[in-house]
Image 1 (cartoon, rainbow, N blue to C red):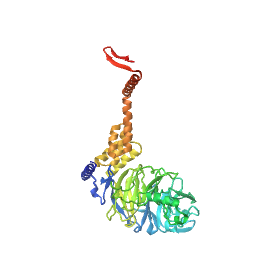
Image 2: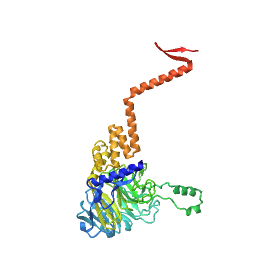
Image 3: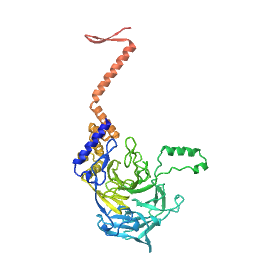
Image 4: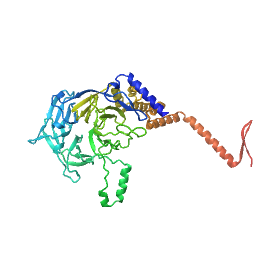
Length: 492
């Protein structure tokens, strides 16, 4: 029966996409999402590729190996043009350069870049991961440097090299760096550059192989341990921070790692740890096809959407703040909207920007009408305006009747309104056991409150009947019906 439901679902999605405006046929890549059964089906596009930007388009020479993009608070963008050893600041439309950073004045000494991999801007200060010079540079908008961070002189820092490939600074002034060959998390520095330890280390996935190795190490002697492989967590590949100061990390492990994407609080705890989420593509129902995704970059949009950039397939996976999948777009290829080798991602409220280090271009994806509806409903939902989100959620279903996230939003809104039976219906369509249980509990409580007097009367009658039966058995009382009513005779 379930098989036929899936076929019907797929066919309905196909005809809906064929007749709706803004269909995915215009895209140069597969546009899909996952239904309630976890199967990939055609879907409405949330974004469409509108243009590709080269170095010449902004008034500089061709890019070479772009490795990072960052959007500053004033709307301008900063590009780490690694192969050309420069950082380029451009306007918000990517139509003109504002400044090219190649030389820096550090107390009268001129510094140059060597393969800079990352750039981050905070409080008008620019942080640059000057990778092959083994340092982090902090400078102002004029290129005057006030801080150089080099390899930490500490027993805690075990790596031989210091090759920072990503950098960011939080609201408190701490500086974080993702460093090659470090699996202990990102390297953390105080505002003055002093080494402060490690932050946000990934966990080791407890597979059967890991557990077996751990068991044998307990029994092995010191000589045997030297030849046994160590189980180490996957290294962080990139990170970003949201408006509330939380740091999000990703890694490029080809397995479904437990910490593929994390939201880390100040204590280093992963707030996504207890969520049952598979980031990236999902395996088939029989696990005969188990896709591999490796996330090379992560971006948190101004309205809280989580954009994960998949290096393996050149795709972008977008989630809301609760890790509900919203959209999948991009892919491998040579046409607009596809990539040879993705390297970085950045976003605004309406656009997503993806860098290709082989094409040496930045592709701009613009939000579609469908994407705008989904984002409007999602933002309202995330801000607690469940009822206000109802109308856009139904508009979403009008364009894509299999869009699972809409079922979740509608069910939540109905629970908030006390329409528990309707909420159960949409929770079932979303295949959300948690929402269904919550709606069922509400419906049960509502039924009890409405029928409390009747339930109490029934309980009293049942209790009285049980009491009389016990009394009869204990005292031998014979109960009989007479014209004058019920009478009891002592038969002893």
